[in-house]
Every structure is written in structure tokens, then in C-alpha cells.
Picture 1: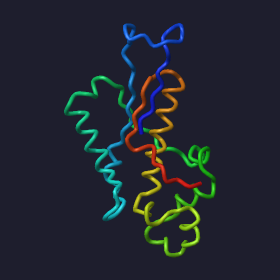
Picture 2: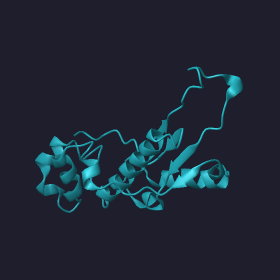
Picture 3: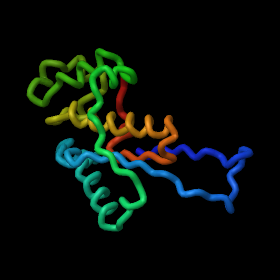
Picture 4: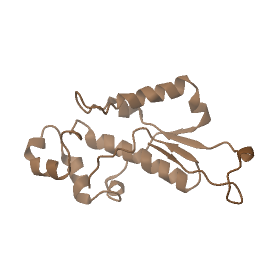
Length: 157
């Protein structure tokens, strides 16, 4: 997703005549386009790669700082999700999912949120970019943070 922090002008108001250039940071990892949710699923990570290529071809990259996200570590993910849920995401694979049907149901993983090869790595990249963007915003090092791989809304726990 896209995050923005637009501080008001001095005095608490945004004045059209006093617009300043917003500082934009953009998080992208080239590996993200290699993940595949499976046939028929609407989430297509290769679209993130396509959006990145548009950004390059239109020269928009010149107007922002580009960062490769650090993959989020287990403990960083656990700041936002339960340890049990995060451990489940780390260990579940297409090869072992038939052994974990109760957990798949419990954590709402399976159909709309499929298990796919490299899923945990994808989530580490996704979360890492979102955390990186939040850090830039909180430190006021950016006004807008972009992480097209972030903001996935189906996490249940």
C-alpha cells in the first residue's frame, strides 16, 4: 500500500500557495514478482513488477528515494501478529498443508489466502517494506511511503 503523512503548514493550515515538494520513499524488491499465488487467484505479484517497470519507464523514480526492503524478521512480524500465527505461516507449505487442516481453518488460510511456494518469504518482503515505510514516515524522513507489496488485508491473527 500507500501511506502518506502530510504535515500542516506552520500555523496548522495547508495553504495552496505554500505547497512544498513532498518527499516520497518507495520500497521494492525485484524478487516479489517471482511469487505465484496459484491459478485463478486475483493476487498476481508480477503486477507489482509491472508497476515498478512503469515507474522506471516514465521516469517517476527520479522524484523519489527507492529502497529495497529488509525482509521482516520473525520477531518484527510478531509485533503485529500472534507468535502462533506467524510460526504457522513460517512452517506451512503446499507439501505439508494436508497435515494442518485445523490450523488452515483457524487462520483462514487455504482458498482466498492460498498456501504457495515461498509464501513466508513473500510476507517477509511485504511486511519489511511496510515497516520500512512506517519508519520513514515516523522519523519525518518522508511524507509519502509506497510499498505495492504491502497492505495485504487477509491476515487474521
